[in-house]
Length: 138
Image 1 (cartoon, helix red, strand yellow):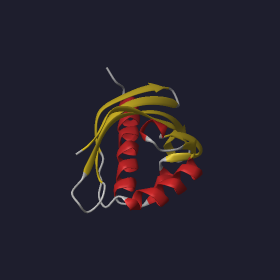
Image 2 (tube, rainbow, N blue to C red):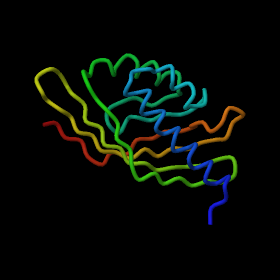
Image 3 (tube, helix red, strand yellow):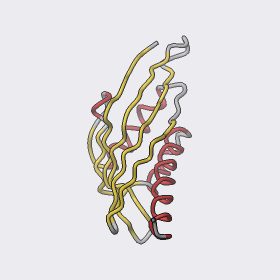
Image 4 (tube, rainbow, N blue to C red):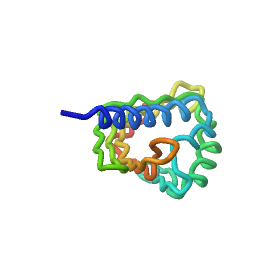
């Protein structure tokens, strides 16, 4: 049986995953400062993005994502593994992205493989790596 602390940790991490998606989908990239540690490693190369430290990837996201007229994140299958003050998770994502005004949509399905650390400000993500499931343009 999970302890109250384990339940709380899992809920805080799951909320952090949702906070990431909300920041991206609402184009509030500065909100990501409350999701990642400053030295976090992020790897979006699986779907043609970049890999690097959080500040570099945040700047890239703010530059690239406005080129898509619409997109959203739908997360599921939160598999969170706690280990004291660290944790890992694997979460599935469905992410349709409008490619322009002509109705063409790119459907992305991927796994987020993440690592977390408990900080004085709460849980923060230290690593995010995308693993592609499917990518199709229709």
